[in-house]
Length: 275
Length: 362
Image (cartoon, rainbow over all chains, first blue to last red):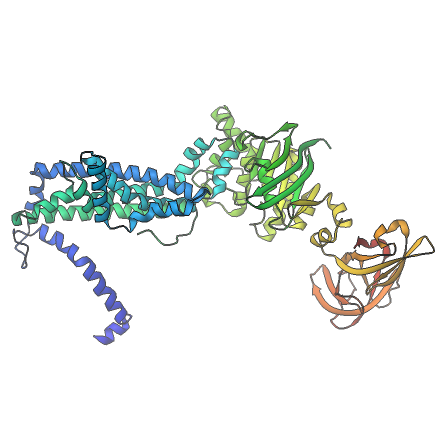
């Protein structure tokens, strides 16, 4: 055993494997029990069924929460990407007083505990502004936490974009607006798509902020949490989780492919991915 | 020369840093004009002011008699070839070259014809369909040139366009740019830090140091009569030797040059600073001759020793140590048939001529 390990690169390799198993094994249990023909989440497995996936379609509250989540995720990812675009352009292209602190503050939600963000937004919205909770308040919170990710991705896009490309377009007779449309936008498009996808994914599976700020229509994670009280619903949640994991993996892979394509197109060197 | 661009009292500051300190110059129609200087001298900033990418802090820029203050870059009759070429990587070669024609109102066929013409002019005929990001550095350079020239600007601005190319390609592009400039007859303004490049290509050169033009002259004038030690040192190779002048018999000046010895020059050949004063004299490597065995001296002779030999094939550069000279002198000799290449350590006789001296009074 130890000789085999030594050949394979030593104990460091074993450590890496153990680490990855610890990290991902629970996620692999999701599809396992999603297809298991038993309401009890336990080994040994009882047999194969697609019953739980079929069960997903018959619940109006579930489809409602999926719809709410999709609306919130799309809206907040678009808002976060628009804001990120402005911040990244300002940060990379211009110099202005207070630039360091301002850009730093934009990134703070990245490390702020979400429960703090959720509670403080709740206090501001309900107690101070007196506004009702709705999908819009969730969108507000999600835009706040997605924007730093959008800024980080779009910063990289702008940094690998040679300034003289924009100057060349202006030199050739284009206005700043048409330069953005004809040169800047196509070249940072992969970054924009990556930012949209990552923001979408973050918003879709965010729980704490949505839990605090959601109105009459819960988002998908909030709905899942509310269903955990009923043990017989657990396999259905497993099936739902499987779909979510698969969708997340696909979206993040797309985002990474877009980011790399963007670097290649701008002729820049890959300096380590965002993911 | 009919002036096309006139720069008067141009200054530019970035914060506390004064990058340009009062630029005065006139650039003629159809002229190949170079801005030459070390990095940080302000030459690129000056070019970007002419292009409209920077606004001067004070002073005026006239182009074709029209004041350019407040005229944005996209409305100026100038086009630029960028140091990085700035070829749009997401477009094809033809789309790059035709980029500026978008607002021209020409029909698609007319545009296509112009693009093909421009590509032919830079030697890229038939490359229109290629993707720009797949081009080599030299090809990208040509695309950038075609893209700028297709709009028939009054002035073509070139920001160190050849610095990223290898030596062979650079030399080829130098003569090609010169040919192209004669062909289209447009004013070219070239920014470069390479003095050789500036000498080869330009009609006139403005040598810039520290945000000021130190000398503005034609290449030969610049090489033969640099106005200061700094210019002489920057353009080509020059040996500098301390020298004292003394007026004798009221008309001739006796010069005592460290290492080379004494010579007598007429007073009007020599700047006033050397009349009972001191300074430095400069002498180019090709103005000094090594006397080989059996050769007769026709001018003044100094004796020294060969300290270093650098063999270039067509030329040999010697460094000669002269007693009394503070530094070794660089001497260039053509390698003619039958002429030996001297070895390090042997004695050498150095012939020189007072008429080739360049005077820099203290």
